[in-house]
Length: 434
Image 1 (cartoon, rainbow, N blue to C red):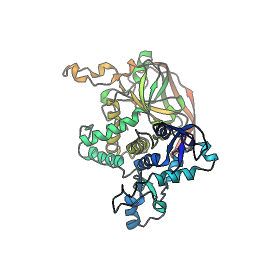
Image 2: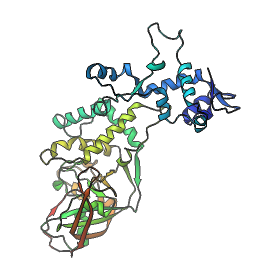
Image 3: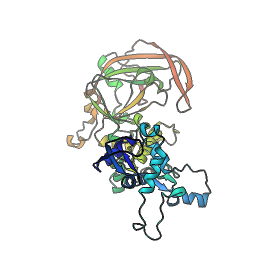
Image 4: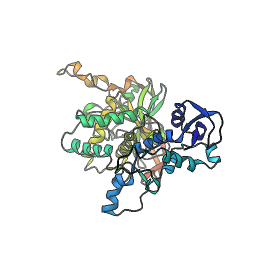
């Protein structure tokens, strides 16, 4: 049994655990004197319990099935020292003394249950060469872990049975509530004054010369014109924008000679946004944090799967069916009082896209047949949260192709020339919801 101290560790939760002992003395490992200390036999159980929050012993996990039935041998298992090192548990001071492995071994050994505490047939899974662990769900991966399995089942049900926005089932709601906890840590605000851009492909007609009409035509489409989209079903118009001009144009993959309408909007209200661009780099809580839950680790994979889902190319033959799950999850995000979603552009690494939960003019929801109260959950008009600062009619002059982040063709440089505004009130439009 040894004596370790708070100077042996960098992890604040381990330090707090040592302070709970309320003992001062000299450390056997890093050499610190008159410092908060504890016995390795007292700290060891905390270390072991923390490891088991996220790791299974290889003989008690799906690894045993793989080994027996599939024959996999090259499994990336970890020993306790690997896990503590990965968690940045040890201090530089301890490392300089070359005592990290000594302390780790003593914590695991001294923290083992005594013979009196163990059942007759119970083995010590932390004992010597047997101490090999694998991340829970590692072999099955994101495809079959609890979150993803539920999501795949959910996708199948909403595509083939329940269809739109049926999130009332208890098991599904529990799943989404867990995801909501992760979403809370990836919430940002778009400040008043922020610039956003929207583009439309010009149809055969022309736009009215009245500035008032520019705002209307550059906003979300009317209810009866809203097409099926990745995050909004037909008839429910969201506003698809980008945070800079170049990304906005590249998203529609224009051809040389195409004419487009481009609008620059300025926000007049602060917006609450789910930032999906932060998910891949989101740091999971420490194993030693009392609030650590392994579900968050899989929740991250769940949201990464959603990101992949909204950015992958689809065949025009399966769009209506394949969009349903992402539309439903987007509706769930909206139900949590978000104003929109931020995600990476699939065509450029220079900016991001936004789906804003706002619709066309408020009068689009008027009906002589339906009470105004019926529309209490209607989308707020985009005119209430932004104004159009600049409107341009452009013609694509040249396009330069490069490899995109998804290994598909994308547009790195697009040159365009200004065109004069035309004034035909019977203009027709091709709305790509960008």
